[in-house]
Length: 143
Image (cartoon, rainbow, N blue to C red; front, side, top):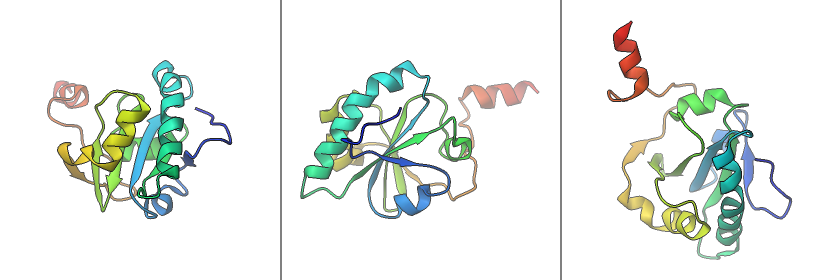
């Protein structure tokens, strides 16, 4: 998911993620370099980042996390597939389930996130618990 210098996407890692997140509302993509869907998302994600950076009314930052190099972050946020996109603001996160277009990413991060399920941002070092209907929970019941 390497990005060009013309992009406003912030590349974050375990070392700087929480400090970056503390700077303001954030649209975060958890990606994998080998993932075809992530590669397809890249142009729209870059475009959304640039639009948000140029919008004087927006304080949203756009972050990418290579989940394969930052497995602890992926685990903390319950990433189970790629790309996983979340909007984070004021201690809460909202799962993005919309179209992977720049327009929809911008709309979600500026207004539509309020219609998504609101969850507290997990504390650093925590691991997300699988929901009862997840494959991990079902697997755990078998053992």
